[in-house]
Image (cartoon, rainbow, N blue to C red; front, side):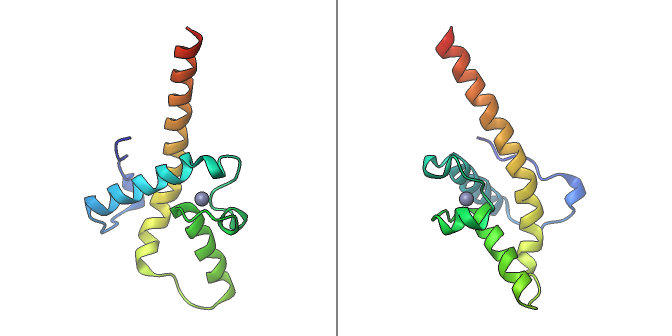
Length: 107
Ligand SMILES: [Zn+2]
C-alpha cells in the first residue's frame, strides 16, 4: 500500500520520507497480523498479548507516561498524531481491499 500523505493540519513533522515509509509499513504489518486480528491495537491488553506494532507500543508509551512525570519524547509528538490518522486510513484501505476480494470470490 502506498504511503498516505500527512495531513497539513498536523503541521511540520520533521520526519524523513524513508522514516514515514517505514512507519506506514510497520503499521500495515501490525493491523494485518492474523494473530491479533480480533484485538484492538493501541490497547495495553494487545501489547501484553505480544503485539509490538507501532499502535500498541504507542499505547504502552502513553500508559507509562501517565504514571511518571516525564515529558513526551519530542519525536513521538510528531509520530503519534500521524499514527492516529494513518490507522484510520489503513483500516479503510483494508476494508476496501476485503470488499474487492469478496466481490471476486462471489463473482
Ligand atoms: Zn498492535
